[in-house]
Length: 497
Length: 94
Image 1 (cartoon, chains in turn red, purple):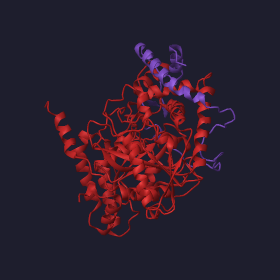
Image 2 (tube, helix red, strand yellow):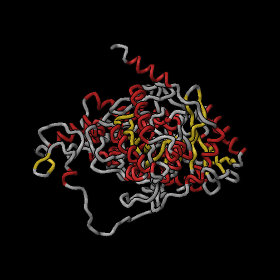
Image 3 (cartoon, each protein chain N blue to C red):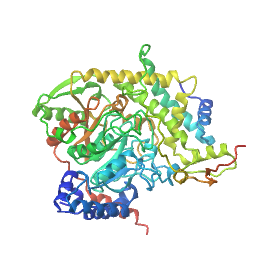
Image 4 (cartoon, rainbow over the protein chains, first blue to last red):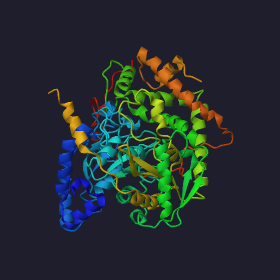
């Protein structure tokens, strides 16, 4: 088995036993990134030197039996939305293409403290707005399973890098599905924790009441191992929940007997591919075989979640992106007076999708429309949340599709934003309600990965790991991508030399 | 209910975004389509429903009013496009 094929857990065990060193693992990943990433474009910045230095330090600790955690010495990557001190952090935007943070995000600080080795910062949709990673200032990222297809978004780079074996695990953020959907499209596990479980300090904000940092991993257990390190209250994030990490890894081994799993009818209706609906029912059957109890449930306000989400997220984004004015950091357009500088900086620094959402949000918040749009959205949010509160009184967990389709071609939805937004129909309700959601890889459909979503009650991550591990065991390991496709693409691109 | 060109210009001004002449029409069209889709929210009777601004049951998260070191001036200016005398330098207002 190649180093890049190991799970986080098995790589950690190999490091502790001395079968591999962190330097060896890090070099293996760096070489593979150099080989495959020119075609894949999953990384914006590779921090090779810093990674090898950190790996060396990890090796010293490992040699003395002083591993800091199950993550010590294991190479990983961060979506380019997490601030890392002295490392270029761009949010895939021209606006921050020269931004070097003077501080670490809490998530990175905790991972660093656990011995994580940072390989680099991953590609994403600009300012996390998008579902395809096509809006990145640094160009689209490709799906390792099919290079002409999108990896999903906005954390497409993090998902693709993991699926292509360019990191042992990665981090992303999820505001409307930006971890779960790319996880489904790329055949990896993707977790969005309960809102408030993981600190948002040092994460460049998109929509403050919806954003959550989360994890991409090869297995459910790997995911649990990472969550144990990053979860828990942070006094520097005033929206951080007063709670600590739970016994996540243990939950993966709990038997399924007696666990009630709900199938919400609104998620298994028109608008979702037939094949995906079939997969959900098949998966439910497999969970029933293992002792789970399957119940039909209803979440009546589901269809209103999508329009509510887009108004709410855009409104919050318009406020969060007001800070980009060329004064203190980032891109500045040179002009003679301040107002012109603001206008030019923002018009030149932001891409079209970002501008569209700022406009949408500004409009929704403007006087005369505030009540009809923004306030209405907040009331719809209450109704959506109430649906889930109600349903979790009779079930422990929900099983749904992660996305209504599998991956589509690069360029297919660029001119039709509404059609792209519709792809979030299964994920956004979870963000509105602030609940934990996880996508688990289930099967391949015509060569493209298909994941299924588990939704838990607030702070029910242990339940997700319990059911997710059971589902994963029954689904079996997905065949990996055919990398020859990727290398062929790169060679094709150079044919004019 | 569509979005008019004037409303697009108004929002662009608030957001300090400069739209080129061709762009304004494109934005008006796209935003109109999006808002028409959003209209379905009006189907819901939310008369007595309280708004949810924050999903967690938390409010007034404070810390003790004690001074601790913040970002140094040097670090704070480290990404400044232009600086002068320890301050951020910008073009004049008028």
